[in-house]
Structures are given as structure tokens and as C-alpha cells.
Image 1 (cartoon, protein in one colour):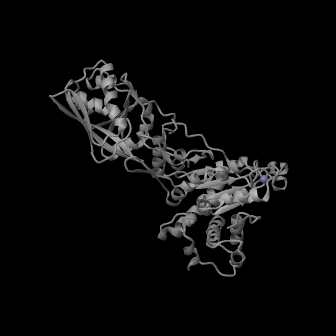
Image 2: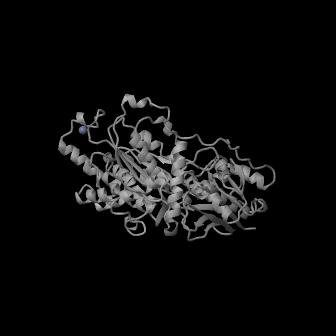
Image 3: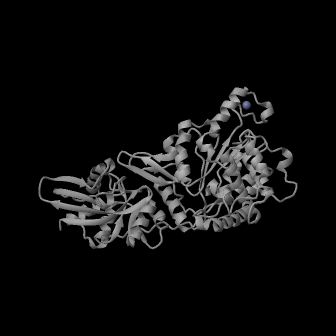
Length: 510
Ligand SMILES: [Zn+2]
């Protein structure tokens, strides 16, 4: 036999695809030709595969070898094809029987010594193989637990090319994946640890219930980070497709937790304000790596000290926040990752960031104004809730009654409110109030009686609120009503919404 075909899988963005690796060995000048749109890493595969075969004590077929990766039109990146290429050409050379590898997807990078190395993105690749009808996969030992997360597939592991060869020849067996720990992922920080901060807690709850982006202003020590870190704890768990998608993104980034389970909690990402564009958006050579934006998909992206962020970086977030997708330009074409995040930004009120609050500020009025100006702009425009937090005084740290609500209780209210909103907007294709366009809320049957919106219209007339801000308040009012179990907002809910939009100082209103 001088022809063989072995199954493998590749990735385009977050989507896995089955790839067939064909090897044809013919007489002629000894050479290896790789076809099927290989990128640079794939050309390097040729040298790695040769070294691995020879260093595993196997005979390199001295013939003209053509390796073809199908479908040809699919862009292929990364090193996950090495093991399948080695297997295909050894089968083609007549050194291995094909039967044990028939219909099995084989994934893994080869080291020069013949060791099988882990690759990124095993989870979505195995999921794609299963979808295409594959029932058995052979993956690197270090990726095996991750592969077992995918239901409906038998996962075998290898640590070396030699082991795969011996298995096919019937003289050795494949390895079992390491047992899953069975431990659920550790629960994140809980809201019961945040005493005081009534406004902050309320802002967080409304943000979670309506899917509203949130901005928090205040001096260091006001608890902005503490609050933001606890937003995932009051969001609903991810459902099955969401969990698979989120886990796939973390798998491609190589940061999937080792427990051998799907990510079920909404993720939390807090990139530093000096983070590079690639770290935020994604990119890198070879197999594109998702950035913080995509690792926060279905969860929370927290930008602390947002006024310190580079303007261009902030700008680059605008489109993804709007569309829920990140598009990364590549040498050949583009790659797309999902990035539907709940955005939380925090900022000090001014550059000196006096922890004692505004009365001790040493900034000039111009410096303060310039700093605030950085916070306006298209990205901040998308944020519904803008609250100002003050440092918690000692008296507030000791709760007067022992009833500092834990996240579980708040999450229940959030869940109920989300259900109410989803039922209301089901016919229009929205799930959360934060997704509903403003004009929709000003039209019947959703328009609110003029008597209830009098204060709101007054704020608009006096220039305290922009037209866009007006719509944001309406959206927030619906979420407040959902949280209160009312079927539409009344005056009290609108007042609360104004509070969440404008705070007590009107400095950040708009
Ligand atoms: Zn200052």
C-alpha cells in the first residue's frame, strides 16, 4: 500500500473542523511535499515529523512523499496535525496496519524526540470530530482530560509516536485519560463579603438582571474591584451550548482549568489597563489566540482604571462590545471569535486619586476636567449604569443587622427578573432589557404614562441628560421593575433608574 488516509481536526476561529490527512508515497526523488494550504508552522511539521520518526527508531520511507490536508480550502494553523501526518505516511509506507486507526481522529504535536506534545484547542476539535460521526479519538496525554469533556466519544491518550506505532502493531496499548477530579470549580468571591456599599450592590444587581454595562467611579478603597469581581456570582449559570462555547475558547487559549469539566460559571476577565491590543482582542502567530474579550465571552470584562487606558485600545473595544464578536486580521483572511461580554469599567475620579475623596484632591480643575473627558466617548456611551461610590466608613463595615445578602439570594432575584424580561421580549428577539433599542421603549405599548416620566423629561429639557441617556434610563427602569416583580415601571422605578444613571453628582451624566 502506498496511500493512506488518517483523520485529524483543525480550527478556524472557535469552530473545529475534521481534516483528512492523505499520504501518497511514490517512486522518484526522495522528498516531502505538503499541500492543502499549510501555513509556516505546518511546513515546519515536515521537519518535526521526520525527526520524530527517525528518533523513535522507525525507518523513514526514502520515497517521494506527498501529504495532502483536506478540505484544501480550509485554512490550517498550528501543530496539531503532526501525529496524523506521521501515522499516515507510516501506514502509506506499509510499516503500520491501518485498521486500528480507521475512523479514529488523531491529534497531537510531535517533538523531535518523538514525544507527543499537547496542543491548544483540543476541546472544540474533538467536539467537531464527534459531530462528524467520529467515535474514537487519540490525543496527547496532557490534553486527554480536556477531551473527555465532550460527550459521546472514547478518548485514548498517547505520550509518544512510538506508543501509537506499537498500538497499531498490536504490541502496546494506548493510555487512559487521567481521571477527572470530579470537584466542581471553586466558587468565586461572594457578595456577602461586601458590607455597606448599598448603591454599589444595587447597581451590580440591576446590571446583572438587565445585562446593562456598568461604570463605577470613586476613589481607591471604595470597593469598585470587590464589587466587579462578584458580578459573575449573581449571573445565571451557563447552559450546555454556552458552556461548550466558553470552554472551547479557553481551550484554544490554552487556559482551560485542569478539572476535566466544562466551564459552567460566567467567566471573569480583568486585563490590566496597560494590556496590549493582542492581549485584549486576541491574535498571535499561527493558531490565533483569543484575547481577554473572548475569554470573558458570556461573562464579565472588567476594565479597572479605564481612564488610564490607551485611547486606541479603548476604541478597539467598541465594535466587539456592540456586535458581540471580535474580528482579527490575519496574514491570510480574518479570524472571528465570539465576545458577548458584560462590561464593567471603573475609574478614579481624578488623576491624583486621593483615597480620602474629592475634598482632599490636589488636581487642578483643568486636570480633573481633562481626565473626565477621557471617560466619555463611544465606548462609555454604551454603558447604561454610572454610579459614584464613596469610601466605606468603619461604621458601615460592621453590618447593623447580620443581613448582608449572599450572592445566592441576589442571583435568585436576578434569575426571576431575567425570566420576566425574556418573556416580554421573546417575540422581538431580545432576551435582556440591556439589548432593547431605545425607540422601542418610547413606542406603544411600552411607552410610559407622561405623569410618571415628568422628572425624566425635565432632566432632558435642562440638559442634565442626553437623548441617549433618556433611553438608557427607560431601559434601567424596566429592569428595576422586573426586579421588583412589577409588570411595568412606575414613578418609583423611574426615579431609581435616574439614580443609577446620574448618581447624586451629575458629573458623569449624559
Ligand atoms: Zn485629584
